[in-house]
Image 1 (cartoon, rainbow, N blue to C red):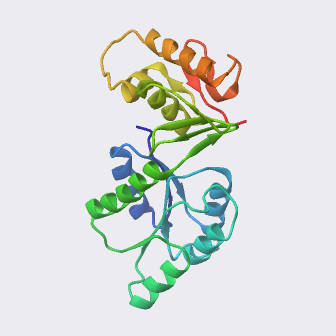
Image 2: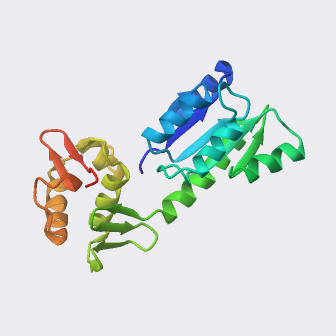
Image 3: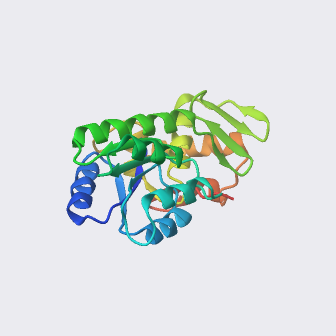
Length: 227
């Protein structure tokens, strides 16, 4: 499974480090911002699977950041946002949710509860997100792949491989990562089987070898780039 990319916007270093270390141990990729302006810059440049947002931060408040995300047209417009804050009145909670946050957790919080809430939104994202790369679209919920409007008959493993690469777009996926995450093999194994499936996918989707959506990094693995 693709590692979830989480943005944490928190100016209390102790809390930020505690959350970052814990979520990294859960297998997530963390980006940390200290201020509202820094957060908006990161949000406009990168796609995140979930945003953890403190309310009382520098430059812009968490509330202002949340509203800016929801009123923008960047890739994170619909990304789940969880407020983490010491503001604990019912009015604060309502204001945060009305600003566009999906959830609200009050400081001090139990880390296991935070992880559980994060995982709920990550599961929902994975089940519902249709990935589109040019004229190719892939629906993880229905396990369907389309070329333009034509349904392409991929085998289950072909679908899983294509979906894994599309989920990790713009990042080189090594052969070891692919074998572990798509085939669930965690020991020395002949990774040439990946090439067989890649060739089959390319043929079914009419992709040339130099197509950026399914590009070979010789001796390393593969990368998917949008077109």
